Length: 119
Image 1 (tube, rainbow, N blue to C red):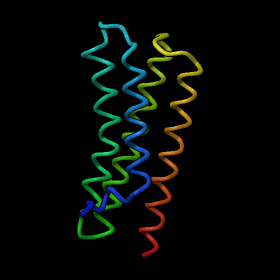
Image 2: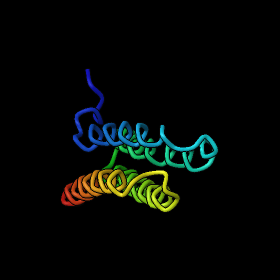
Image 3: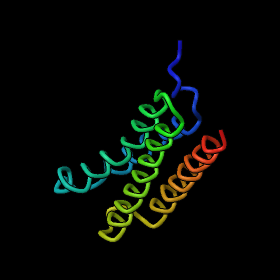
């Protein structure tokens, strides 16, 4: 029997985003393993974790709170990507691909928040 969050497209997409980001940061310099890489990992994983945690809350209000935390984690991930681009750890093309993926996730999260607010 699946958990509630497993049925959510936004949770499924967040897992794909995690995979994309992990592939990207695998190319970062070893000197960044405990700084920027660690921060990006925590931010991107937080997106999926908060969707999953919020999906099992008893009220839409609580779920929305967790979705907003996920949106914040998307923003944090994007900021880390800007830093990685500024430091020339990723190319403009790599940045743009992840930026567009993040934008899609953010839009999906905001759409779910709007839907839950209507109920």
